[in-house]
Length: 165
Image (cartoon, rainbow, N blue to C red):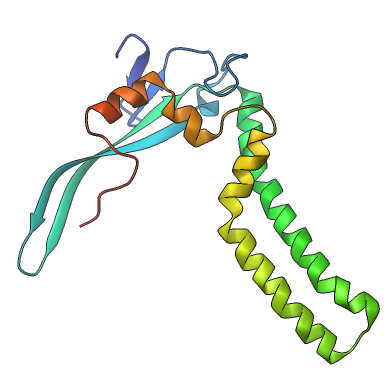
């Protein structure tokens, strides 16, 4: 484990020595800041008292190598998804007003636009994954799952979700 990764005590994370990008598998990572850091949790102790429930857990951030172009694609995909959602809501808001302008048209256009906004933000992660998928690289979640060190931690009982009391 320590041959491929270095433990950074000051930032409390595990940083990769390997430079090959785990998301496109073509380029190499140039800066440590371009890494994707997957957070994993390990439950240490769970206490269920009469009044209080308590969970103690460990937390670690594991670096997955990522090149600059994959980092920019991952970062921009969230903004693109938000942009598409607002454009769709704007079209739904403006489209009825093109045919007739009255107070009824305005109120009947606001409700569908709000529905599109809410549904869009509920589906934002799906839209983001589709944008990344169309660029032929792995998403952040899938790329981290293929990382050898993340797999080793998962086999030892670590998990993606933070334990709750």
